[in-house]
Each structure stands twice: as C-alpha cells, then as structure tokens.
Image (tube, rainbow, N blue to C red):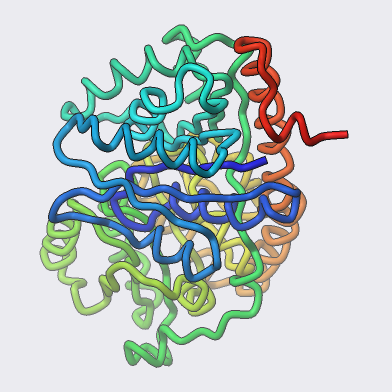
Length: 384
C-alpha cells in the first residue's frame, strides 16, 4: 500500500513532526511512504522535505503560485498516477483542496488529518469555507482532538467518516540526546524553563513571560528558553524588555536539534489557549522532561495532573508561576513526572502505536473507494 502525505508547510512545527514520524514508521507495517510539500515562490519552507530525504523517505515538491494553481493540481495528479498511490493523506486546508482536485474521483482514496481546525485568522476563512465542503467528500477524516471532531460534525462532515487518532511521536531521538543547549549559550549553572512551538498568541507565550518575574524572584538563576519562530516574536521580545527580564529570556529560534534542546531543559511549559494535541508535549515527555500545560484540546489525554505533568488554567500567570516554582523546589517530583510521562507516551502515543491506527484507517478508506468505483486498488488485488 503506497501512502502519499501532502502538506503546505510554514516551517517545521507540530504537524510536520507528526507527519514525518508517521511516514517514517509506516514501512514497518508494510506500507510505502512518500512525502509531498508545496513550494511557494520566494518562501519555499522545504525543511520537511529535506528532513524526509535525510531519513531515506521519497519527498516530492509541488511548485505552487498564487491561491489556486492548476499546474500544482496536475503535478499532484502525476505523482499519484506515476507512483501508484493508494491513499492520498492530506494535512491542512491547502493540501485538502488541492489533493481533492487531483485525486477525486477514484485516483486514490482520500484521508485528511485536521491538526487544529478551524483557523482563527480572517485570511484563512475562505479556505475554511471550501475545506468544510471538500472534507465531506473524503473517505476518512482524522483529528487528534475531540473538540475539533465536534466542529467538523457541526459542519456536516459525516460522523461515520470521522475518527479521533492521537498524534504519534518517534521517541527514539529523544531518549538519550546530549544536553548541548547550556554550553552553547553559556547557561551552565542556570535552571532552564522551556517553551517550544510557533510564536503565535494562542500558544500563550505572553502568559509565560508574565509569570517569569515571580519565578525569578524565587530562583534568580532561572532562564526562559523560547525555541521556535513566528509573528508574535517581536511582541514577546518587547514584553520581556518591558518586564526588565530580557537578560533572563533566550529566543533560540528554529532548531534542528530539538532532542538536545529538550534534554537541556529542567521543564517544558506550554500555556496555550487553544490546541489539538501539541507535538512538543509528546516530544518533551519522550525526553522524560516534566511538563506544565493547560487543559485545552486533547492535552488532558497527555498530561494527567500529578502523574505525567501539571495543568494550569489558560491565562492564569499566577498559577503558572506557582507551578513552575513548585517543580523547581521539588526536583524529585519533576523527575517522577518525567518518568511517568515517558511511560505514558510509550503506551499511547509512540509512532508505531499511532501508525497502526492510521493503517486501519487507510484500509477502510480503500474499501470505501472500491465500493464507490467498483475497481480494487493494486494493493487490494495483491492481497492473498
């Protein structure tokens, strides 16, 4: 069974990490993996394609100009046909729309993953309106978060096509990574409190910065490390300066060495206002780091309070600072949370566990395509 994963990437963030972990694991289950990334003029964002190739996964780029490019549709269609793709698995608005146009009807079964939907940005509302129509025609639609699934139901995606499938993480790179961040930034004696992800307001970076002065009052050697990039960076940098803590806040940019980053941290904090299932939590727990987060989206399935991490209400800077100080004062509790968190991820969210669920989903999608078209796929004809 050949699976083609398609995404319009804005960098290497949670969706890209989940996609790559899935593509890397599927061959262990007898599937062939391809990865496709849209290539936009002047803003290529090909980190995912490059990482896939480094892992020996076939990666294709799809040049795309403007909001709608018929040549991009034709390019996807050629890949589907020339590579005998059984399932086109799309990730996000643009991939859904282009994938549907290229593969429907009958060229490949259609599976979509809605990572965090709908987008709050007005600029994306037109895509969202089209996406809700197109997804009704997909064979299967997956999401990592129950609330996102409920939104899709309200927008008339048939319930029998909807599945909640957690994100999966390739745990191996995070198990024994060397903690290089401290020496790189001269933070040998500092306590490092990390944030990882896109720098956008809904991730709650401003709340973490508001909590920082109280933490620093108790632990002057604490430092806050922000790994990632995004439109809120300038705002957060200005906030750190206004609070007089700029020297204790490190904006480390996008990192290709995230296993080393997590290994360097004393904890990860993600005070989001909205999430589906954040990959950074799964990655931090894979590295046995303690985590503080907010009970939004599917986060409570990952962070079990007092067992695999701590939870604070969104926007509550005082509660967040208290939770951070609690873990800094109790290293034994922090270690226990990290240990139990890694075990929880191993059981529920390891890439192999999730890949098996997606493989079952692909088989169902192929069955529906066969019923619709009356012609079995090459993969189905090859089965005994």
